[in-house]
Amino acid sequence: MTFQITVAPSGRQFSCAADETVLAAAIRAGVGLPYGCKNGACGSCKGKVKAGSVTHGTHQAKALTAAEEEDGASLFCCATPHSDLHIEVREVVGIGEFPIKKLPSRVAKLERLSEDVIVLSLQLPANERLQYRAGQYIEFLLKDGKRRSYSMANAPHLDEFITLHVRHTPGGLFTDHVFSTMKERDILRFEGPLGSFFLRDESDKPIVLLASGTGFAPIKAIIEQATEKNSNRPMVLYWGGRRPQDLYMHALCEEWARTLPGFSYVPVISNALPEDGWAGRSGFVHRAVVDDLPDLSGYQVYACGVPVMVDAAKSDFMAECTLPEEEFFADAFINEADIARGQTISG
Image 1 (cartoon, one colour):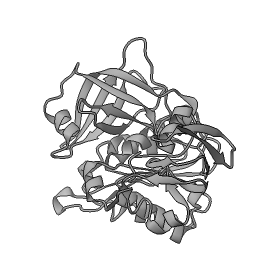
Image 2 (cartoon, one colour; image 1 turned 90 degrees about the vertical axis):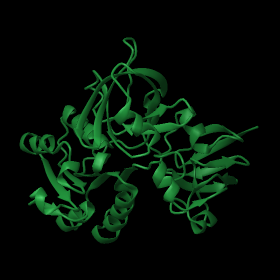
Image 3 (cartoon, helix red, strand yellow; image 1 turned 90 degrees about the horizontal axis):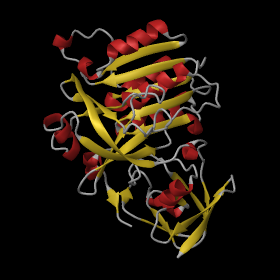
């Protein structure tokens, strides 16, 4: 059995099987629903069900509260329909522009940038090319059926390799392999491009780029793509880490600040030790933005990193800096440990 899904305000329609999530059907149809994690944890795909009914699968309570669900809100990544639906959601132009492919790739290089960060470079077959928007991600298809998501860390025009920034999570199924047994010329399969985190080119507003840890990866790609397109939008990058070594491409950011017109860089460290000799900004990285830019009403913000940073940034920027909700774009890096820690609701 299939149902018809109608999206407001665009009026676009697509079909969805009874055992398929609304988001999966939209991706298949090339309809641009916003999304991030696809597993009920980040809340990026939240919208309203205006007519019809759905059942929600397992999701985190913070992504969709019981009160929100009662009010008609839905997480489309874990919502399966019982009828035709009329939904309301802010569609994203450009999501369906490039085909989603399943591709083999060869490990071209493994470059350790810090104790716990490796740049993994992937080479595609000679007759293949992955088209994507800077900021999007791929999912590795592991042998046990599990998937692991990583953002592309290079803009599409720099496509000799696809580069990813992998932070070691001790005990992590994939990252343990990357840091211990993976070697050059290994074959990995992935699916992509995925995600709705990319620069909205139709805007001319100045941009705040906010990253924690390896959340820098898609931000780096966005900066490279904006530079390639000769964007004249002012950009300021706030990159936060616990200690200075967490800013594993600090020198590159300093070079951008010296050479790119309209670009500035603010590194922020939250837990520097005396031996680090850190003399720069300290504290939570998103609070540095609040201190520097108390009025964000005319800005766009692109935030990527750990969920607690992304959630706090959105809340504080809207409450204290008058940032319009529709100008906050985010990609929270949610791993298996985050999901396990989060309170879940089973549908």
